[in-house]
Structures are given as C-alpha cells and as structure tokens.
Length: 328
Image 1: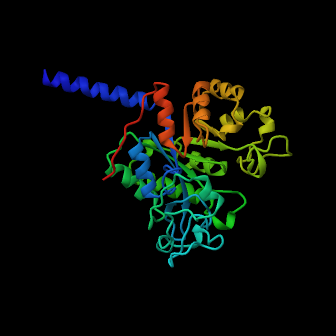
Image 2 (image 1 turned 45 degrees about the vertical axis):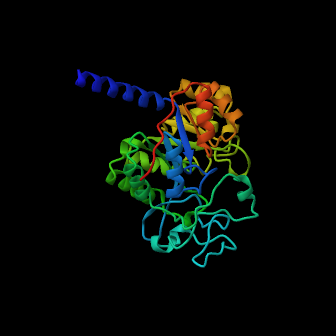
C-alpha cells in the first residue's frame, strides 16, 4: 500500500510538473524588474518567485570564459568600478578583459538619475554582485535542486561589432562545451538576434534547440523587410524571398521557436507560426494587460522582467504554475 501511495504521489507530481511546463514563464535576465540583471542574486530571486525558464545573456572574456552579461561593453548605467564609482562612459568590451578583471566590477545597482534606473523602480540593489560565469549559473540551479528549470541563453553577438566579440564558431563551441560539461543539453535552448550564431550551433550542436529572436522596428530591425538583399543579421536568408513572412523566414532558419518583440506580433503572424510548427514566446512583456491578451491569443510562453506579475495573470487564468525554489 505504501508503495502504491508513493507511486500515486510521484505520478501527481510528474503530471503537475509537466502541466506547468506547458506554458513557459521565462524570467528575463533573471527578474530584472526586481533584482540586478544577469547576476546570481537575480537568478536566485527568479527561482524564489517560481519560473520555468531563466533567460540570460552571454558574452566571452579575454581568456575564453563564457560569462553572463547583456552588454558587449560594460554599461555605465549598471556598472561600478573597483573604486565603487559608476563608470562615466561605456567601459571596455568583455572580450578585452579576463574573467578576473571583469569580476572586479560591481553590477548590483542601477545608476541613480538615469532613464534605465527610472524604468525599474522596483529593482532592489544588491551591492557587490559580480558578473557570473555560465557554469556558476548552472551550479546555482543544480544546488537549488531546481531540476524543472530550463535555460534560455542569448548569445550577445552583432555583425556590427566583430572586433569586440568572439566569432560565431568560437562562441558556439565554448557555450556548447560548458553546457555539455554540466550535463544540461536537455534543458538548454539558444537564442540570438544574430542568426550567424544559430547557424554555428546547428553545425556544432544540433541537439540544442535554437530560437530566432526578431525585432522589426527602428534602428534595431534585424529582419529588414523590403530592403535589397538579406539582412546582415539573418545568416544569408532574405525575408523577401519568403513573401515577407517572418514566420516562414524563421522556419527556413531551422529554429524550433520564434521570439518576436511582443508589439511586433499580431494574430495572423502567430497563427502562421503555429501552423508551421513553431513555438512562439514574445519578449519582453511587463504589463498585466499585455500578458493577459497574449496568453488569450495562444502564445506558448512569455519573457518578462516581472515573473511575479506573470504568475498573478496565470493564476487568474487557472494555468499551472512552475514550483518556487529556495536557493541554498
């Protein structure tokens, strides 16, 4: 009888965990709206709120270590030097500094008076937070026994910054090694606006799912519909060769998922993507009204700076929630 009860409980837990994974609650840079972005402390905060996926950004140090950080160069809005003062201007590229040199900087506080700080009034500073390695983030989650949590890792590459970043093959090989060494291939996906990196992963590690990131407005437009030739961001593919359809372009790039800027996504494009077999997970969705609408439209998950808000919306919609975790 005891064995039957234990089996039944295990089955319930398995079903609940599987159901929670049906809608992907991704904490953007951990929980950027609440804690310093891309830090171990920020990822711990996201785990304590309860997410199914940690979204994070990757760069590479001068000595070839894969590190977790958003900007190609140190950002004065988020970075203090060894003297404790905020940088007065953009700092050196990550690729120009060793890991030891990078970890002399404090990234646990937003610079007062900046528009960045004003955008995240709920973020609580954590002084002496450092730029972590990808391996350290994997260790944090492993030590927390958060075996349900996945990792959506974005390679911060750009065709415009060749001198400041590793080449796509080198970057993909290094990320693949860290992921395989950690035994986490089954829980990792890779996303990028620079699809050259995704093409490198397809060649080097086809078992790691790839996600095509898109933004289709302003100076950051990486699709460039209606312009001569392919966008430099899309690894030789031209959206105009696919009838101007971003979902068809993403499918041609052999991505399993499409992650568009949420205000670029309309119902027709969502329906087309789903018909092509693509999962659709928009970024970065922070207002409850937008979360509610996009879930009703049928997206597969959302990337948000405020996982606590998204959980509230999921509760209201009676969606299963990922477990909360207390890191050690």
